[in-house]
View 1: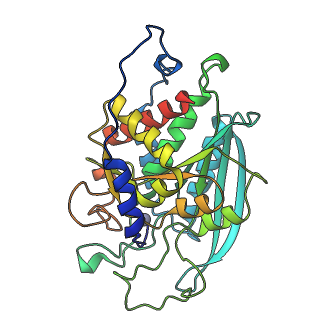
View 2 (view 1 turned 180 degrees about the horizontal axis):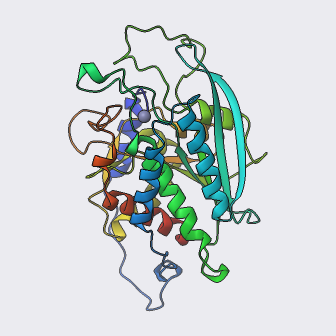
View 3 (view 1 turned 60 degrees about the vertical axis):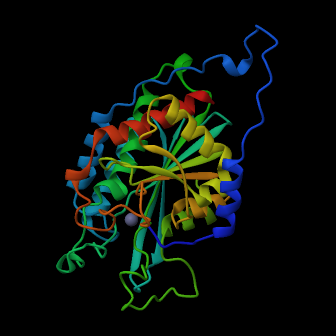
Length: 343
Ligand SMILES: [Zn+2]
């Protein structure tokens, strides 16, 4: 991620809606439970140790920068993992040019759980890492590659763990929806005007240098004609004391899904992580999946206070395994598993 698209008018409208007082609830007149009171199927446990291990495994390949051997090897690992879970796997290779003129070979990786079901939910995450830690507070480190433990690996790991858990369920304990894990490549090689002001953006006026994999997938969907009721994007979901706010593009395109996720998190006791705080739109893969007709919510780490859009480890060498906390991954993974079981 990503530069910022402030849309203050939308934000103002949305916050009015959210702060409007509900009218007083009428007195109950019946003792029959309504359908809404029947508790939904309880989701199986999301194993945070497993998610942690998937994060560490990706980081151990080295930075997953397109065109590098570590990137190729990690991509193969992810394909094999999804196959191991019994998913139907597609690989979508593509070529793209980055803002600095590099021609990259990317690969989107798609795994379908219960592909026969018509009702589907998509889980998105980007699996590449930014080629350099250009936002590092230490100037000497800004050309170094970064581990992308939270920014990349943790998000893929949460999606993998959900796929693993689903794959273990007997049919009678499966959710009522099919689930697609869509791992997009080359999200993070974009031009950041705040850290790269001295460089030339060769894509200026031609397109967005961020989210190259999701842009390609949105224009060439795999599987062909793909449709989902909604999508959930994970990005930076592994850091200690992570906070997830209600981001602008998510609210604009998928407010009902935002509410489902945040309410479920609260019911499960994760309201320290999922804050009922509305924040500005950002550029991330959900911009393109929303444009492709899949209402998508971005669950990404946003500081709880202050004016920064991203946490201090964002695009810095600090984004390594030392900041990863199983509890944050558990909060995200268990919440989304429960959302799937509520369908
Ligand atoms: Zn990033």
